[in-house]
Image (tube, rainbow, N blue to C red; front, side, top):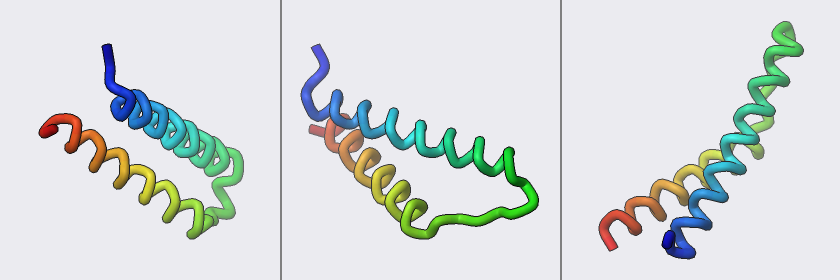
Length: 61
């Protein structure tokens, strides 16, 4: 059975992918005005960094 940490990591990955998909859809709807919300981009990167760290910890721990 998956560990709690792995389930949390999977949940974070799903949320990050959802945000990426939403951003992609917004870009496709408005290709003439490409804007990036810096705070959201940084939050997404931090989330992915945390996910990678968790997955590395699960693989090595």
